[in-house]
Length: 264
Ligand SMILES: *Cc1c(COP(=O)(O)O)cnc(C)c1O
Image 1 (cartoon, rainbow, N blue to C red):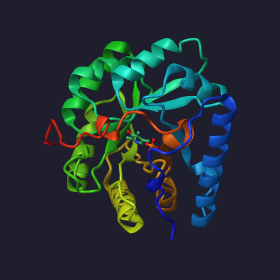
Image 2 (cartoon, rainbow, N blue to C red):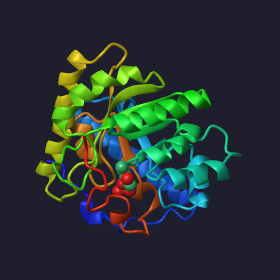
Image 3 (cartoon, rainbow, N blue to C red):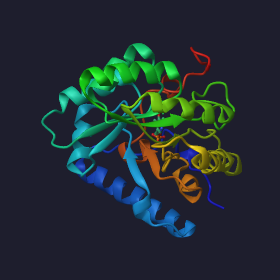
């Protein structure tokens, strides 16, 4: 059985040079290919989303030089700053993968191509209004809490069907699929259960999804667990540290230990 690599957390080597980054990228791609082979899947069916949060602009430039064209960021303000600083890099697009407060919807509507953490109708409404004003559309993923931890954002699995039924009211949001953060644990069986839950939920909801909502994508898996996620059907893996190196800031900065907002 595939193990997690959460024991590596905080110990990944830094990508200080383009060569480092290219080497890390090749390693991650080889791990993706191996996981696909175990699962009998085509590696082309898995998209690697490099996550550049906390990384300085210079590292963003390395990723672009290595061929990356869509980067994931957790915080809208930080992402906006990097977007503004890298206007000279052709074809670089941004995916916001962290919880959004309605007062930041304006920022995301301005620059993001993708938003992976949609978890309330208030945020959907705010994004729709701002996107209409900008004349833009946004690819979105609905975030689901599959770990049962109160500290994780996302809808409860039983709330997702009704949520999806409400989304056709927001035509600027192009719903691509579901996203989750698994339990952060070295217990691979418990991590896997989170991914299985997201996939089975998607398979069930696909039957009854409103017209225009296809739910093709499953965004699940990060540096410590993306191989297990691929074995369970991930179509997008969000990988930060294994590409860029360990982050200086503690993860509590990104995954709050308590929710400021309770789900509806
Ligand atoms: C930071 C982050 C990741 C990537 O985590 P790594 O351990 O750096 O691979 C994935 N998803 C989300 C939502 C994140 O905030």
